[in-house]
Length: 289
Length: 255
Image (tube, rainbow over all chains, first blue to last red; front, top):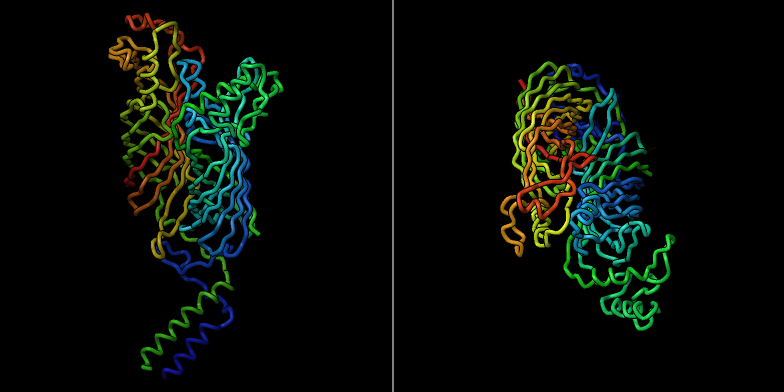
């Protein structure tokens, strides 16, 4: 065959429109180990995925415990790489059972820097899907991918001031907005062209000390404490960042919020820093557009 | 251009064209029989494990396990585990800080302080998932995912962090004789794991295992009396349960 003939033949074969696949005589053979690659039936590239993780529990908590709801938007730039934007809202953050036990049984409390809790946050992270596979389960085939991601964002934080007791529920003070870094891994299963289920473990990491509570630093809290001892908190003379109103009035249970000033002052004066991990199990249900 | 080079270019063109053609035609792939069937096989495995999410205790384990697979999705395992366990630095700090305070009044001991020393377990292994993934372009890995449910007995030791029978230094918060106990308790266990096949006769095991036993500790112990060697108090009426989470890694030989 001439060179030109070979080019024409190979190009013709390559460009032939959808030939009927020949029957595979080895289909039933148990000795067949390698096969041609199967094209992905549901490609991801340039598609958008919306995932809701409604109930995310924290696992392995030491001094605090969190429950949150997360929403994840993922843009799949290629079949393997994506970018995820993930706002989350912590609807239950409280002292852990262990921390309560420490306080009630041996009268020890965790350091203030170790007791800071997340309230809300938003992170951005590139997502990598290095492994894809499929498995047979209950008579069907499920396609899945292993996903790995790491990124950063910001989160609002708070700290418990008064524990829940006979005088009413616990009270909290804001400890400001912190940087949050995250890393996680999990599985993403695809059901048809559109539906996905994700099971991921994600660590939300934040760090720092407690330098301000409700925007008030040690000097502000000293002024508020003096005002309280002189008859009532007026909020005059504190810095512009200090939200003196957070220490005024009473809670719905009748607790005088000015009692929190002394606790806040003690926590700010305590010093120290800590790195805190909120490791959660994220079960999410998604749709791909 | 030599004929060899032309042929190479032609081959490259054909190679590039084939995936595009294949992407349009998507015939259902044939179902491949299992490359590593396990039904009717006996297995012998060894694993090492470490506890995760430690608060007051940490644990390391060494386990040997024998199993029988009735079919491709149901098996039975029996295991023997030895463990090295101890207090975390946090537990030691709690005890130290408590001892530095004057021994006035009573103290309740903390929960979740029992340490695993040994354990025998038996359970069923449900493996409804068999699949494969590719490591790189040419290395397909077959695996089974399974849920393990079972129970047995655990040999446990406990060293208090609140009840000291001999304070060696009040200032430093050191104790020469912490109150200790031992017991054998029923334990239940649940695990989620993978058998990652390396061949017909072997698989890597990777497991996340939870072991649960009933807790037991003292309440209302007079600190002064305890430091004189007389530990009193009463057993907690509702002590709850202790959950120890382990990550285990090992290898199974399948005969």
